[in-house]
Length: 129
Image (cartoon, rainbow, N blue to C red):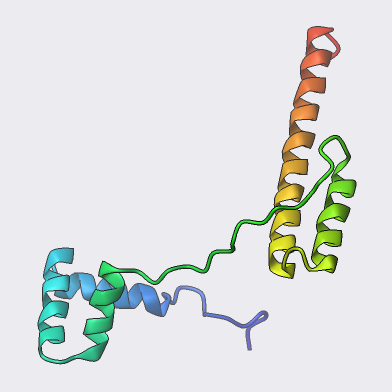
Protein backbone atom coordinates (compact mmCIF):
# COMPACT_ATOMS: atom_id res chain seq x y z
CA UNK A 1 0.00 0.00 0.00
CA UNK A 2 1.29 3.45 -0.94
CA UNK A 3 1.72 6.21 1.62
CA UNK A 4 -0.91 8.92 1.28
CA UNK A 5 -3.23 6.95 -1.02
CA UNK A 6 -4.47 8.59 -4.18
CA UNK A 7 -3.75 7.86 -7.81
CA UNK A 8 -0.66 5.77 -8.63
CA UNK A 9 2.23 7.71 -10.19
CA UNK A 10 1.99 7.90 -13.97
CA UNK A 11 -1.72 7.11 -14.12
CA UNK A 12 -3.69 9.85 -15.83
CA UNK A 13 -6.77 11.38 -14.25
CA UNK A 14 -10.04 9.96 -15.59
CA UNK A 15 -11.31 13.39 -16.68
CA UNK A 16 -8.14 13.87 -18.75
CA UNK A 17 -8.67 10.47 -20.38
CA UNK A 18 -12.30 11.36 -21.20
CA UNK A 19 -11.22 14.68 -22.76
CA UNK A 20 -8.57 12.91 -24.83
CA UNK A 21 -11.22 10.43 -26.05
CA UNK A 22 -13.53 13.25 -27.06
CA UNK A 23 -10.68 15.01 -28.87
CA UNK A 24 -9.92 11.83 -30.82
CA UNK A 25 -13.58 11.30 -31.76
CA UNK A 26 -14.34 14.89 -32.74
CA UNK A 27 -11.74 16.92 -34.63
CA UNK A 28 -13.30 20.25 -33.63
CA UNK A 29 -15.45 21.64 -30.86
CA UNK A 30 -18.07 22.47 -33.49
CA UNK A 31 -18.22 18.78 -34.53
CA UNK A 32 -18.65 17.76 -30.91
CA UNK A 33 -21.56 20.14 -30.33
CA UNK A 34 -23.15 19.12 -33.65
CA UNK A 35 -23.15 15.54 -32.39
CA UNK A 36 -24.62 16.62 -29.03
CA UNK A 37 -27.36 18.51 -30.93
CA UNK A 38 -28.14 15.38 -32.94
CA UNK A 39 -28.47 13.38 -29.72
CA UNK A 40 -30.72 16.07 -28.22
CA UNK A 41 -32.98 16.03 -31.29
CA UNK A 42 -33.25 12.25 -30.87
CA UNK A 43 -34.53 12.77 -27.32
CA UNK A 44 -31.37 12.36 -25.22
CA UNK A 45 -32.16 14.40 -22.11
CA UNK A 46 -28.49 14.54 -21.04
CA UNK A 47 -27.61 16.15 -24.36
CA UNK A 48 -30.51 18.57 -23.95
CA UNK A 49 -29.21 19.60 -20.52
CA UNK A 50 -25.66 20.02 -21.88
CA UNK A 51 -26.92 22.34 -24.61
CA UNK A 52 -29.15 24.28 -22.21
CA UNK A 53 -26.23 24.75 -19.79
CA UNK A 54 -24.05 25.93 -22.66
CA UNK A 55 -26.62 28.42 -23.94
CA UNK A 56 -27.78 29.70 -20.55
CA UNK A 57 -25.37 28.70 -17.75
CA UNK A 58 -26.81 28.21 -14.29
CA UNK A 59 -26.83 31.42 -12.31
CA UNK A 60 -24.57 31.66 -9.31
CA UNK A 61 -26.24 32.73 -6.10
CA UNK A 62 -25.57 36.35 -5.26
CA UNK A 63 -26.11 38.16 -2.01
CA UNK A 64 -28.13 41.31 -1.81
CA UNK A 65 -26.05 44.43 -1.16
CA UNK A 66 -25.57 45.11 2.54
CA UNK A 67 -24.97 48.34 4.38
CA UNK A 68 -22.94 48.09 7.58
CA UNK A 69 -21.93 51.12 9.61
CA UNK A 70 -18.16 50.64 9.91
CA UNK A 71 -15.95 53.27 11.58
CA UNK A 72 -13.79 54.57 8.72
CA UNK A 73 -10.83 55.88 10.69
CA UNK A 74 -10.44 52.84 12.92
CA UNK A 75 -8.20 49.82 12.87
CA UNK A 76 -9.06 46.58 11.12
CA UNK A 77 -10.15 44.88 14.35
CA UNK A 78 -12.68 47.63 15.13
CA UNK A 79 -14.08 47.31 11.62
CA UNK A 80 -14.39 43.52 12.00
CA UNK A 81 -16.10 44.06 15.38
CA UNK A 82 -18.65 46.35 13.71
CA UNK A 83 -19.38 43.71 11.07
CA UNK A 84 -19.79 40.99 13.70
CA UNK A 85 -22.07 43.27 15.74
CA UNK A 86 -24.22 43.88 12.64
CA UNK A 87 -24.50 40.12 12.10
CA UNK A 88 -25.35 39.58 15.77
CA UNK A 89 -28.14 42.17 15.56
CA UNK A 90 -29.43 40.51 12.40
CA UNK A 91 -28.70 43.54 10.20
CA UNK A 92 -26.70 41.28 7.85
CA UNK A 93 -26.61 37.53 7.42
CA UNK A 94 -23.78 35.38 8.71
CA UNK A 95 -22.60 34.55 5.17
CA UNK A 96 -22.49 38.21 4.22
CA UNK A 97 -20.60 39.04 7.42
CA UNK A 98 -18.08 36.28 6.71
CA UNK A 99 -17.61 37.60 3.19
CA UNK A 100 -17.09 41.14 4.48
CA UNK A 101 -14.55 40.00 7.07
CA UNK A 102 -12.70 37.97 4.42
CA UNK A 103 -12.59 41.05 2.21
CA UNK A 104 -11.40 43.09 5.19
CA UNK A 105 -8.60 40.55 5.77
CA UNK A 106 -7.53 40.85 2.14
CA UNK A 107 -7.58 44.63 2.47
CA UNK A 108 -5.40 44.37 5.60
CA UNK A 109 -2.85 42.24 3.72
CA UNK A 110 -2.76 44.77 0.88
CA UNK A 111 -2.30 47.63 3.35
CA UNK A 112 0.49 45.72 5.12
CA UNK A 113 2.24 45.11 1.78
CA UNK A 114 1.94 48.79 0.84
CA UNK A 115 3.38 49.85 4.21
CA UNK A 116 6.31 47.43 3.87
CA UNK A 117 6.94 48.66 0.34
CA UNK A 118 6.94 52.27 1.57
CA UNK A 119 9.32 51.48 4.44
CA UNK A 120 11.68 49.65 2.11
CA UNK A 121 11.68 52.56 -0.32
CA UNK A 122 12.50 54.95 2.55
CA UNK A 123 15.40 52.75 3.68
CA UNK A 124 16.70 52.49 0.10
CA UNK A 125 16.48 56.28 -0.28
CA UNK A 126 18.63 56.66 2.85
CA UNK A 127 21.13 54.13 1.50
CA UNK A 128 20.52 51.68 4.32
CA UNK A 129 19.53 48.76 2.11
